[in-house]
Amino acid sequence: MADIRHTRLANVLVNYSTRVQPGDLVIINASTPAIPLANEVVKAVLAAGGNPLITIEDAGLQETFMRHANKEQLTYITPVEEILVEKADCMIRLDAPDNTRALTSLDPKKHQVRQVARMELGRIWSERSASGKFRWVITQFPTQALAQDASMSLGEFEDFLFGATYADKEDPIAEWKRISREQQKAVDWLRGHKAIHAMGPHCDLTLSIEGRAFINSDGQKNMPSGEVYTTPVAGSVNGWYETSFPAVTAGRAIEGVRLEFSDGVVTKMTATRNEDFMRSLLETDKGSSQLGEFAIGTNYGIQQFTHSILFDEKIGGTIHIALGRGFPETGGTNDSSIHLDLICDMRQESEIRVDGELLYKDGKFVI
Picture 1 (cartoon, rainbow, N blue to C red):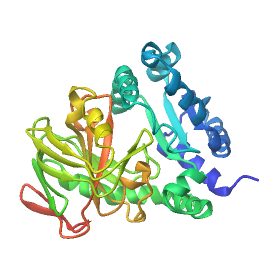
Picture 2 (tube, one colour):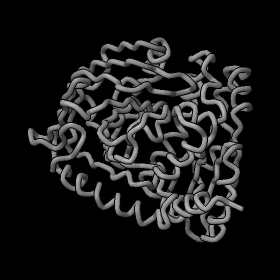
Picture 3 (cartoon, rainbow, N blue to C red):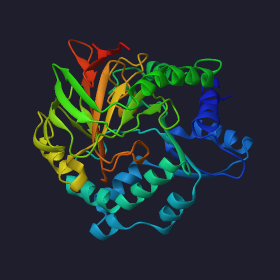
């Protein structure tokens, strides 16, 4: 018998996050451990009148490809991928790694080559998403690997994940609609403002938001969610920024990152762990040393660091920036093959001022 939480989460993903309509082509991309949830998602897509296309990913096969592929194979884009990114109406990704460090020992340059080659796919994805023609959501399914990274037992992590997505509630969609209304107050307040100054023990950063829209991230792209975000004006970012938690990407944890910005570009970077890998990411392409995102985490139900950016960037009382690709729907123009989120704790002796007016202090909105 299916876990009722799987059924509820599938309902949220299909009928709230991606709003599947009759006739929609819906890609369901699932890691092998997530098959129980994928089964419920398929049922929900069919009930909504959609046409599910199921693709399965396996961490071991991905590792085999990355270790043995040559440059030509790393850069090859299959016709199927091109068709799907151009034609699919929705995508629901169910991420469930059974080893979050499988790619740790790979040459960083292989990741760089692969990312650059897929930049055009990312551009099409972003533009179709911004226009509303492509609706997508990413979530996770509990595995031993994710539980270990979060310093929890599997049972504890299951409760954490289904609690954070409100799948433990009788009506999760009602909960997400409530959160959407609350976050919209901040988005409405920010509309029409020009400059942000974030200050605290871990940052002193200024940036322009003139002409930019803030997005209410309320579970319609990430599940769980809980943030408001934008893309800063190109060339406007100045100051310094330090991470409070590791940034985990491609199986590597990059720790103790400190960035200095001048006129929108990173001019100096240091890291206490995996600095060379971080440097290779900054050198990926022209846009990878510039900001594609400034965001405020608003999910106060998430307070524990898990080593999963899906949860960690939403921690209530934090902000995060992302190097690389921006969001066209905000008016952002930065283009890159990477999007690396870096989190900063703002819960003590910190504030955000907008056009000189206090918006946020010690991890909470004051408006």
